[in-house]
Amino acid sequence: MNSKVMFNKPFNSSSLELQSKRLPNGLVGKLLSKGKIFPFAIATETISTAAVKDFPPSAMRKAEKDKIKPLFWNEEELFQESFSMWSQIYFMFSALVRVFLFLFLPLFYILLFVGLAFGEGGWDEREKDFYDVTLYIFIPLLIPYLHYKLVSQGYFFLAPFLRSKPLFRLNRTEGTVTLYKDNGEVNFTHPFIEFDCVLMSSPTAQGHLNYVLTLAHRYNNYSVGVPLHTLIGSNQMVAEYHRLWNMIQRYMDVSQPMPDIMVLEPSRSRDAITETHDKCIKRPTRYWRDMSDEEFSETIEKIRQEQEENPSFGHVLNIFKDD
Image 1: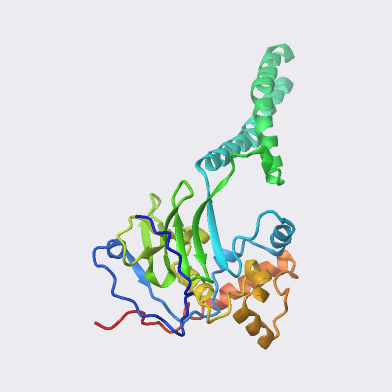
Image 2 (image 1 turned 60 degrees about the horizontal axis):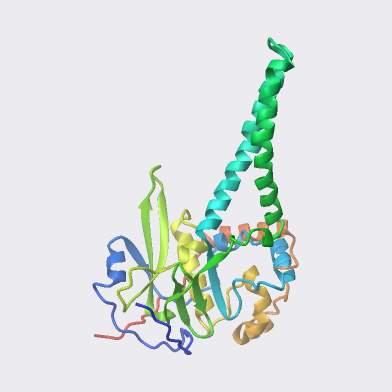
């Protein structure tokens, strides 16, 4: 079932529109047998450090210079994308190429010249092996490696197949959540408050737990949900998923300023609530962006340690109508 209806009422924790109870046989009901619902709450300033630590000031400066593609997160929306199947194959192949070029081939040449220096026989016995490996393995592998290096430097026109696909969109101004299909078409769009946030876990072959944080629509029996865990991965501590949910609620709640994180800093002056808040506390406009990468890492680590002693979210909200 697709839903492309657009809504214009943003999520506001200070004036909630109470919701009906969830469907017992819907996706949420099925997920509850394997996971736990995170409640709606008054979001605090707590952030998910796992979601922001890999986007330092140097990356922000580079992103700000790129006038073609906007930041994935701004005052209007969070737009999450994922790699296409061809992109994943390309990166796996590139990784294998690097393993051969920097591990197996050097080992081969070392053994060949050690044998030449200390072993029996001379160059004539090893010449064919040297030229065959160089001509038919080293040079062919060097070409995709150089291609990968150029793409990594930003020459994306050399790899038109490396196109990302939309995964989901959280719209702050409209208060909506959109999930996309694999082909890029809209799967559904619904108000943020109509979703339940569910954390599920599953053991790996090594005995560790992988986590999935999903927004499941409460009133439709969809077979899929919105994968919020893609923002931080599946191997974090449970408390970090609580912090991520708090940060998402803080962003979607138009009665509160946006989360104070690097990627949203350029957008803070364009959001009225956030701009007013920043003026009241005299927050520097470029607090994050004027840091060095080392200062940024130290600050994020300090925040992470401090947050371990604090609750992950504030007062729990009752969003349901009384029976």
